[in-house]
Length: 640
Image 1 (tube, helix red, strand yellow):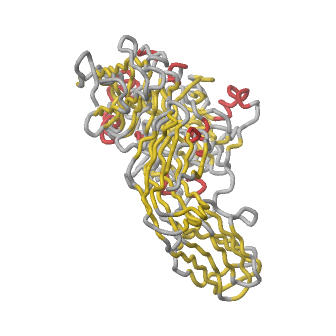
Image 2 (tube, rainbow, N blue to C red):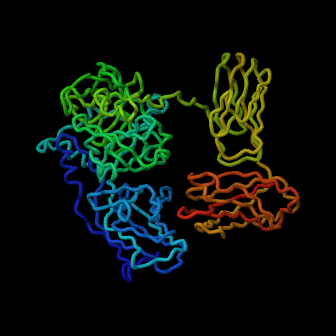
Image 3 (cartoon, rainbow, N blue to C red):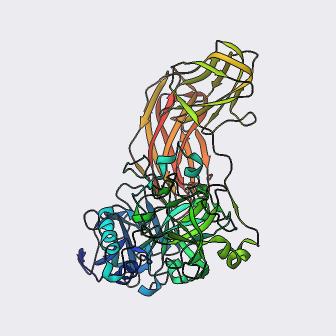
């Protein structure tokens, strides 16, 4: 990318004043403040195109080696209508798009003079690299008014550096520290470690998120089915604090004890609704409820705590990916429990006490009652190892926030957990299956590529079992793609147009059965042709992008499949068509999908009487401004 600052691009870093001195000090004095998670650095970037009509320009902003994330602050942001600036991570998995009339998720720090229109901060991107891509999309750049100035970034600390900060502040007795919050040995584990042994508690960790505020870190969680999140007052206490915050859902390791992160969904804080310093809570909203709806929400347990009742705490202590505190070697029975139903917190008799491991960064975590799987307290103070850790009781907080919930206590979405499915392989029989009358057993076949044919079947043994199959979700006896309920154990389900996906099978016993077998049979026949070259889709342009495939096959095309892999935000902007060699147009999808990203899909095409030989084209037209993307690949599959 060629960018200008006058006639040259200035690309340098200078170490700025750390904004976190007050945060670090507050944290050291009793472990009360948010732990520092990043530091501000001064940079000098002026972004503008090197000439008119440029389709796409890119530059790379590199943070310090080992930085966990980069957050870009725009001191001035003014693009011509139609132009877009993308901020992306190194892998392209995180992409945020900003136009002057349509800002993606962002934060606003009023103390830095940001106004949320011409000055704001982009959402952070994970890793030590941020890619900035400026696309004019035909817009005319006026150097007298348009431009992008970046004078500050936040560099996320590595986990090692956060650990050093915790050790320093927690052992600094002279500054009032020595509040570890770990009660004996640290018994917290990655949330995924409990997926099998404690599936309900693991499921209840879904509504918990990592909270970033101006370089500090806490924990937050969604309460009730509306747009409500809760954390501590000492994490967010003002409207400005809410507007400057990021909320990371699903920030957790994908394997127990591993370092590979699951996909993270980031949203920004919007409005502070209610806060109280004595009970140390804040209730606030975020910008995109739909984006995080799948992570569920907590109900509230509005009652006094009971001594020795079991609890657990999902949290982001120490800045770590999500962890669960369920076990505690500081207690008899090695479980987290309420050790003091009432104790002092910031006020008299406001809290419950427990010897359940937490750490800096755990502030704002839900303390969840095992009996109800609802939140009974809001964690906010350390006290271990000499005393108890402490959470403000929900029955004290509820009267202050009840009107936001129409005075109806949130119940949470603690419904029935999805069943467990046993993995099976293609063309490998699973034998000696048995079940009592009305029993249900689930199996899953994970297809990484689409076979030509797919058939599920059972046979053998005695009794009577019925079979239900569904793609991508667990079937029930009333929701399925295919069912087979013949008398006996011989059942069959043929999937007419199989795709690369997970297929779930339910075997339900009409009467007791035994010695039965289950087999998923796949075949791969036919002829495939593919184009894997990337084609950028011009924004809001009727010319569109066309990707060709030359088919040497002769004869009638008949019925065939088209698999498309189109990467584009807001798929509702797109019309996808297939153009045959003779010019016939098959519209595969037209302006469907709304705000959902990407079209990764198989289409079945009836091209009977159309000759297959020649050049076929996949044409994609974007009919609206701002959102952009490309054709990644596509494939045609003909029968022999």
